[in-house]
Length: 121
Image (cartoon, rainbow, N blue to C red):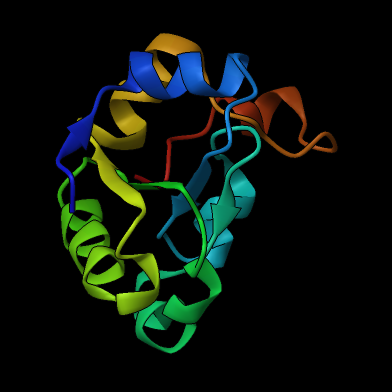
């Protein structure tokens, strides 16, 4: 693992269309409810069986609700020999911090009432 990256830096990477994989480690239902645009869902409990999917990637950022579990996820991904040359980081502050500043993508079919429901993080 190469440390932590701020939500501002993640936003900049996405806006610059950088070659980065944003990996949301929450369960599928939470991811469907809200997530960083252009991120992908690989639930934490599936990481060990899916780590080979990251082989050859240059930059990987793991995200979770508060920035704690994503540190472990980044360490796991970074310890895989196929990601030895990759920059692997955890997003500091998690989705809570990112969402407060930039908002999160939500399903288009969501109603206004459910958009105001409490966040799953």
